[in-house]
Length: 112
Image 1 (cartoon, rainbow, N blue to C red):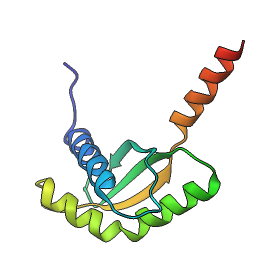
Image 2 (cartoon, helix red, strand yellow):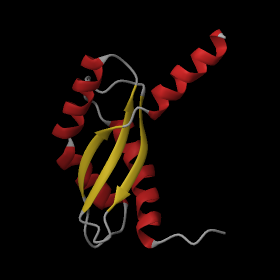
Image 3 (tube, helix red, strand yellow):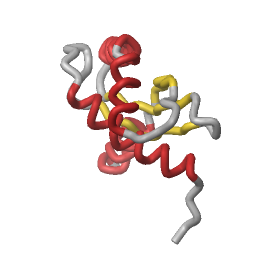
């Protein structure tokens, strides 16, 4: 088994809970096709960068990230309630287009 650091374990736990929280959000700007690709927590657990993949055009993506940013306080509160940490990290949401890129490559390969 690989030797995981504490930050790796915390990152995975936060990723799992963050996915669940985003699915529960009632904001209409958040599309169904959204997923948490990665979460990287700093060593001191003060900050977390979440890679989010949103399927759709630029407006859908922009609206989704605006909704996530406005729900940041709620998300942080829910993470602190669900994950037992002394300090809950502050979130930064960044676009991760790896899923979309993978779908694009699949289409190219299928069309060959």
